[in-house]
Each structure stands twice: as structure tokens, then as C-alpha cells.
Image (cartoon, rainbow, N blue to C red; front, side, top):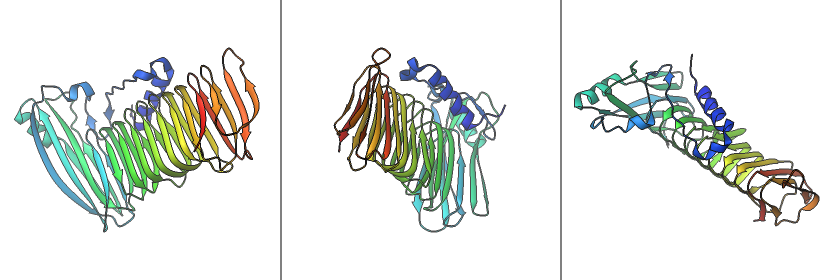
Length: 346
């Protein structure tokens, strides 16, 4: 069976959401065989084993001429990815391989057996870390990438274990890792940011259409984001959006708070959901909205003068408040199972 990144993330999501009572203690451990990367038994608990005390490091730099708006696809297994803008038409990739082994000979063997394949054609560069077809070995190898690329480069990254940091890239970005944090700053066309176990931080970013950011076990912070549609989803962790401008916003978590501090747009739709946590909305009151707030074991309160149309306490202690503020042009829905729903004025 071919295991894809989408399959891996979907499997983790199904597992986590099927047992909401365990959402606060999501523990993702992965053992995968990835096509093109060789068969590598990888386990977070084994990586730092005291067996692997000898280390060897190898560095190299590769240069590719792709123009000011080319494409870079980067796929790796274990290691961090850092991408920054550069002037000119070249992509410069610094590759840092670090091997840990049971002895120096084993570490050297690891360096030699893990290779970096790259291909350049028609303004597109593909780089892939390839591990040997070994189920067990006496070494471990991580590969870090430090990339300088023209600001307009379109970039796609995939990794299993490692942080991804991108700054100042205006080309289309799609960033994926399984175990690691993702931080994106000053990016104009961010489309997708996903991790299974790690935090997501988005600062001063934009998207022409949908910006989809999700994690299973981690927090999400979005600040200074402008997009047509914004989706921020986690299972275990808080979701916070500040100074956000979007016509359609969805923010969801199973276990923690949802915090929104931003401007509504006329005819915009905004949905905020948490199972175990509070929903806190800070609005400037310049745009009218229709509001529906629900909670099972909490309260619903608005500092803005919402014209209440319905207050319901049906089905045990479930509390529902619906009403309109101003012209009611936007639609705001906020739901918490065991927490408060609060609207405050900015």
C-alpha cells in the first residue's frame, strides 16, 4: 500500500476525533514506509537513544537558476527546513547532514548512505532526501535544509520530523510536516499549512483564496492575516486569530480556547467551535451581524448591544442565544460544550 501524507494526517485525525475524551493527551507516534525515501523505521523515542553517541556532519551547497517565479519542491524525512528570500534568480540550498551512530564508523556509514537527489528543469527544482532500504541500522541521520530563494518562488515542502520556518516568500506556499512546528512570516500567498504534532504560527500572511491551517496536537496563532477564506483547526490546543480580515472564517478545537480579535466584513460568515474551552470574540462594532451562541455548561454574554430574539435553555442546561447587532449583515456562530461564549467590544 502506498502511504501518502494525506492518508497519514487523515488517519491521525480520525483516531483523535473518535476519542474526544482523550483529546488533551494526543500522542502521535509514527512508523511509516514512504515511497522514494526508502524503508526507515522511525520512532521519536528511539531517535535520541543513548546508543548513538558518535556524530559526523557533512555540509554542501547547491545552486539552481529558476528565475524570479520558479517552483521548488522539497521532500525530506528528519530535519528542519528554513526558507528565506534572496535577490537574483538563483535558489541556494545549504544541506546539512548529521549522522549519529553507535561508533564513528557507523556514523560515517550513515552519511554515505543517505543521499540528496535533486532535479532541475524548466524553472522547477525538486529536492528529495533518500534513505537506504534498511529496516534497522546502527546509525540515524537527520538532514537540515537552509534555502535562499527569490521572493516570488512557489514552494512546496513535505517532511516527517522537523520544524519548518518560512519568511518573506510571496510565491504560493504549501507546507506540510508530521511532527514539528511551522512558522510563516511575511508571506503573500500561503495556501496550506499542516502538521500532525506541532504548533502553527502565521504572522503577516495573505492568501488569494482559502488559507487552510491545521494541526492535531498543537496551538495555532494567526496574526495580521488577510484572506478570502480562513480555516484554523486543531484537536488539542488553542486557536487564536488577531487582526484578521477575511470574508469566511472557521476556527475549531476540541480541547482549549478559541480567541478571535478582528474585523467582520458585510455578508461575511464566521464560525467558532470548541468542545472544552471558551470562545472569546473581540469585535469593533463597525459591522452588523446576526449572532447565535450556544453552550452546555457555561454562559453566553455580549458587551455589544445584541437585539435578542431567542434565549433557550432546552435539553437540560443547554443555553442558546440568538440575536442581531446593527444591520445583521454578517453571520456569527459560536459554540462551546463546556465553556463560556463572550463577545467584548474592541
